[in-house]
Image (cartoon, rainbow, N blue to C red; front, top):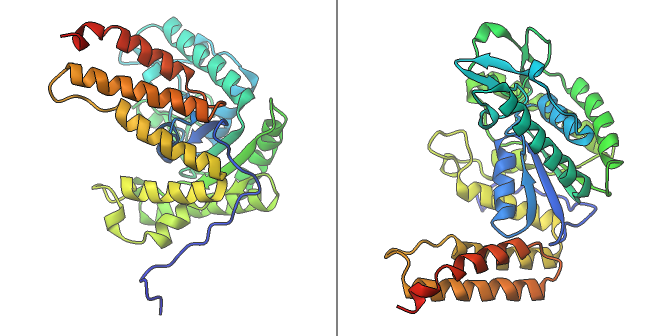
Length: 336
C-alpha cells in the first residue's frame, strides 16, 4: 500500500542544464503560457507564444516554420469577418479593421520572433490536442478560427505517426537554426472536455505516442507534465473552478519538477531571488504614491542592481532602466 496515498511520478533528469542567462522560447497550448509566466516571474529571459496560443502540433509547427524562415504574410492570407481582418495562424489580438494594419503587426511579430529564436538556448514545445480545424478554402490547419462560421472548417484528428514524421523534420531544421538549442517537449495537462471525455482521451493518446516516438529518436527531452497531473496530482482540488485547467498550486508543483529536472543550481537560486524582486515590483500601495512607497521602490532598485552584480549575465538591464526612470519622476513625492 502506498502510505502517502499518492502515485509519485519519477521525472528523469534532462541530459542538459538550463542556466540563468539562457534565452527560452515557449510555443504551444495555454500550458506553454503557464510555463512561460513562471519563468518570467523569476526574471528569466523568455518569449512565450509570440503568435498566440496554438493548441495542436500542426499549428505549432507552422508557427515554428514561419519564425525560422521569417516569411512575411500578405493581405491575400487574411479573412474578413464582422468588420475585422484576421489571420488564421495568429491570435485575435492581431486582428484589425484594416488589412494593412494586420499585415504590419504580424510581420513585426515575426521579425522579432525570428531574431529571438535564432539566439534561443532552449525551446519548450507544448502539445494540447490532436484535434484540428482545417480551413476548407485552403486545406490548411488553422491556429485560430476567429469565431468564423463553422461550415468554413473541417474537423479532424491528427495521427501519432504523422505528427512524429512531421516533427522529426522540423526539429532537424530547428537544431541547425542559429545557436545550439535544448529542445523540450511536453503534453499539456489541460483536459479538452469540449471534445468529450473519450475524444479528449483519444487525442491525448495520439500526442503521447508521438511524443514517445520523438523522445526515442533522441530529438527531444520529454517532460511529463501530463503524467504529473493525471497521476501524481490525481484530485480535483488541483484543478481550477472549471475542473479541466490546473490551478496555480498544481502549475507551481509541475514547474518545480521541471526546474529540478532541467535547471542547474545557480539557475534555481537566481529564479528564487528574482521572484522575490518581481513580487516587490508588482506591489501596489494601498494609499497611492506616498514617500514610504518611493523608499520601498528605491530599495527594490538596489536589490535589482545587486542581483545583476551577483549574476552578471542576467538580462535585467531594461528592468533597471525602467525602474530608474520611474523613480526619477517620483522624487518630489519623497521630499513631501
